[in-house]
Length: 258
Image (cartoon, rainbow, N blue to C red; front, side, top):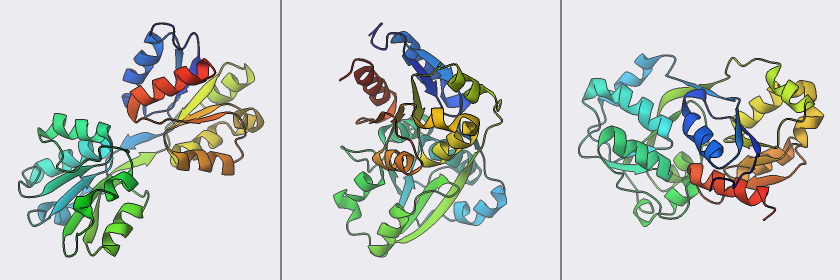
């Protein structure tokens, strides 16, 4: 794999503390990773608001973790209440989330889609078709998509959110991204969420025309659709696998015109 990316200059926009492994993978594949985080992750602004919910999880039927950050910050908050309730089933959105849960809690999820890595794949599982009367708590960041909760409520579940972290705009050098665009020093930009896309536009506003024709690689079709709505008209690739493996493979194919 040493030359698969052959000098490809990839802007990695993950939160800084989560970008190292991907940076190394890109470098090992012969590419050049340019770190420019579009989001930073922080704990809840008011942890006290979570106490009543987290202290009363013993009668919860299902805990759903939507991301590795949800696992990390959720378990940190749960530590004060004895950790995960033993009688609750656990579900994860995506393999990365499942790995984080097993690494941090020593428990694999009870529910994990074999194919697909989004809320839709989780909702398609047979175990979630009949949830009438069940209590479900979704661990997630502040805000975000509502489809998971709305669908489970429509199926009769009682659903609550444990919003255990926040996504905030990082304190980047405002000239870094515009300078890279002016210098034609970017081949492709990775974008992990619609919120990150919004921050990308803010940081790149001084060179918006150049930014909007720069190729993007994204992790879901809905992000691709959002990019088109926001005026991006350059090449756009959607990863067909989750995580770093999917991103590297998508970059390889794009680099070699596949």
